[in-house]
Image (cartoon, rainbow, N blue to C red; front, side, top):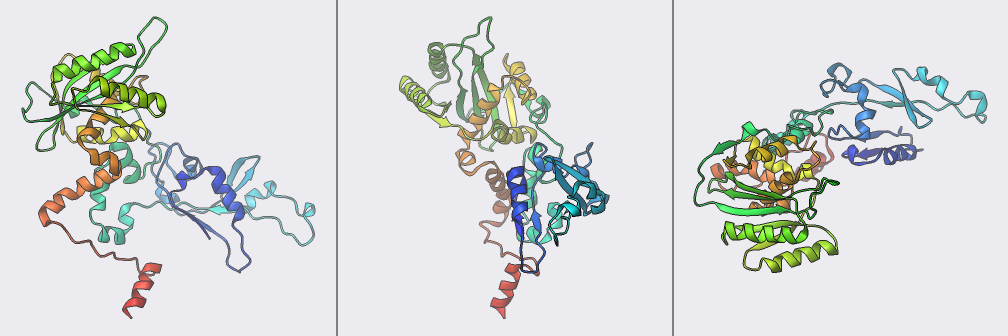
Length: 378
């Protein structure tokens, strides 16, 4: 037997090569088991298309567990409901060596499942459902809803109605200014990225306030002056961060800017992960109504870019918002988005019950772990 966990993380070549290695003379018929979460752009989504509703993206209930058969012909997969329907694609018996039977088509089935189909997991980790509910929309639809068609699209990650526009902000905020840097001036022949600085504050209740946005298309010298002038206006109480590009050039730029802004608290950050994953926490905070925006002439440009993400050519405000939130929550970057949301989901329970003791794992009856526990107790 060959088992794949998270099949969408393997390439089609890896999977089908391992299928070809699945053989045995022990008398047990070789078979393969694979688990995965939905990914609309993976080869697995195409492989399982017959079991998935093309309109909704959810599994078709009456097709769950239905066995189908396939053969690969000229690098293409040919499907059939019965193995005999694929006979024309198999080698003819007279072309085979004596005593060798024609190959059998390969059987496949798909059994959809959700977290509620695993009561042992929910019993051992009752917070897990809350962790899934806390994910941003795209990941929540995939991991909790089981949607095989949902993709990143404009409007999924931000809507302006999620955030209240206010005229006053608290005075005791923890404030940062995070820059997404670019260094090209606008001409008639180009369409460069923007240098964008997002000023973000966090209150004592862990609510967030977007206080200001500065954006410009400028050469490196003007960008440096923009950062210095903005820092002077913000004051020394505001911590400053910016994205540091990998490689020696990025390190040199970061060192130069830190030296140039030595009068302020500056921290360059190496950005890792794709834009969608990094923006997820900020998107989730906005959706929950936990982000307020100070009224200003920059509001409309900010709304336009955030609502257009990820379809717009320039999404510099998105990266700046992600970086600012990470500056205010260093544990978010170190632990990763899913670990961050897991910890956030546990906070209310921890406040009610103090520091809970680790729950005892309840193994599924019949599993290897369950049998081991039975042996210990007997």
